[in-house]
Length: 157
Image (cartoon, rainbow, N blue to C red; front, side, top):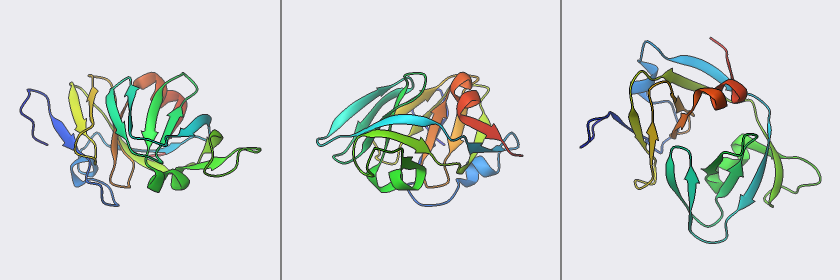
């Protein structure tokens, strides 16, 4: 958790498991992803995705998702099947509607601005005070605004 700037920097490890930095935070809570339908398209070429939190780099085959509030994010091709299932008539691996699976995450409500360096070592997300720092348990971290967190996750203790 170091950065040249004045805000804390959290680094996605890229390896399965939860970050000890987040699991040891006394503010940490457990939550579960709610089943929600989203739109997914799979990029055939390298591109960038403009999310609320920053620009994220996508590789060919990665899923570019659009949520219920119009927000965009990327999920790597390797992790997509662990997190989403096609909604008929969509065929797995093709662009269309998908439903999120109810997997567990760890999250910390942040009291100050912060940044997250994604596992690609290039993409950087910026969080504000009040945003959630989310650990997906697969080596990736994210930033989720309070309104999106409230409609996407349920606290499970």
